[in-house]
Length: 56
Image (cartoon, rainbow, N blue to C red; front, side):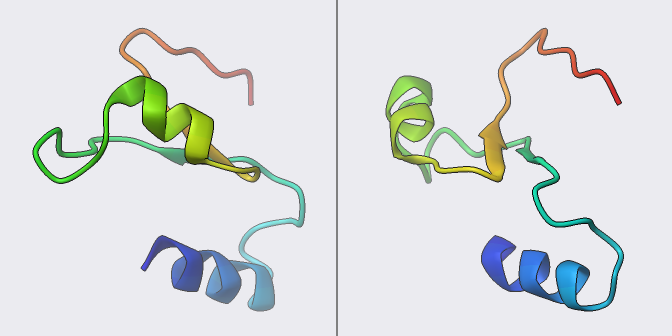
């Protein structure tokens, strides 16, 4: 679903190519561990952690 949303945002010009996409509020019971998600996730997606800060 996130990949479909990303393609739509890129196509409609709502998001620039290469911009990071921050993934938040991921259910622990539906996903792998935090470390495993970070290893599996490729750019532009960023798996967020508690306390993560981003400069926009």
